[in-house]
Length: 128
Image (cartoon, rainbow, N blue to C red; front, top):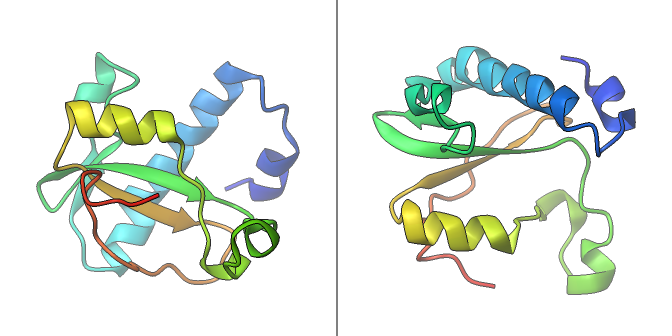
């Protein structure tokens, strides 16, 4: 993984990020999930629909969110320690709730030394 390169790359270069994100998905499925005793694969529906949820874990449809750096302003903005804060786009929240109400969202803090499953919550249970 080229984490340092990814953090420096132009955020508007959609094609580059599409390829880079596929690398993250593959790495999560092939390296992280086995270490957590999870069976996972890339969602086959992504071949036809690039906006389909990313992965299937333990037979359940799931999406992967990856953060390489802590959300540093979370302490100032929300009183949440950056090491425990993640971001989530409202647009994704709405889309998941409408199309995939039982979707599991996995957060992978790729810049961290360890991965942890903090909680499992469907989009309909999430709170803002």
